[in-house]
Length: 470
Image (cartoon, rainbow, N blue to C red; front, side, top):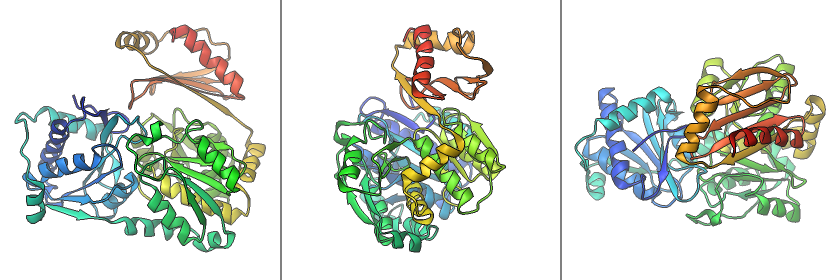
């Protein structure tokens, strides 16, 4: 019942996301920690604002306490990057975050972090699933929460200042102070408001916030910063004449941005902007990393600076692993997650936001001007993204056709290469590409296509729509 995808374990609340399954998973991690002889150091747990997140964290802690493993609980809803930071900074071997990130409100889930504050990779998650299958004494033992507190096996902590100071210390706050920027925030009813407000107000920015209250239904929208979900932020930026608008997803590890003209900047643009800034203005040296569904414009920028851009499968664990292996400056994905060298080993929408504000201050340019400069220098690319739901039979038919039999439709462009690294990806000789893959976090088929313009990308998507009868 408990299977890890590209972003941890996610399930519908009351279906597979239950107290019993949460505690089975916790017991499996206890067994794994004991086998690896790291149980004495304990584990760090955090939670976001989703329904049952705090309770789920406490249910997990009761299992760790019953097994004699100390659980350090971040006692207020917190960003996922804070948990990763604390695991890294204090050299824990394991941490857990109760979140389903940007999934619909009916979902919740658990992300597991390993030594260094990294997302658990495929080897680690496969190992956890093996331990899960070996848990037979159900329901598992649990200690009463208050008893765990009394015995010192559960300790409530709130290390937010330590995390925020680590960001403030790396950002040129003096430059930002001199600009007097007006920033609009949209935490999307999630957990980023306190962190972002603290950083920006320390830099003397004027900060205004929308959608800050606690709402487990996320205002009836998907808590993902997309062009569709950020229309209110767009209007706010225009009406209030803000320098930029910043949004984060439910657990604050992804970012969405509205520029000074009220334009939605796709996460691909943000990734390119930050890499360009870190190399050109801050003088950093090193490659970039992206997944197979992320813009190839990043490759052009890297090449112009004599650097390389590496491609990996979807799942941030692949990006962080490749960044570590190549000492990359930045790694990111088209859904808004990105990591920067010298910070945590995973995505952090709060740190990315701080760097964008610094970029505006240091360059002395508006965000729209910087983006226009990049487009003039490197050309433009347009990304089309489409999601499709399917029946179990339809999923198997598509999987067999594309990935097993490897049959393709008639491609109306000159093909350079076909890859099955993660689903199907076709590379075209003119630099365009299309990717078709099943989501690792939701029951969806996803098609991504990047071409010279939006209409051409849409046309290529429709080739596969017709072929797969979607």
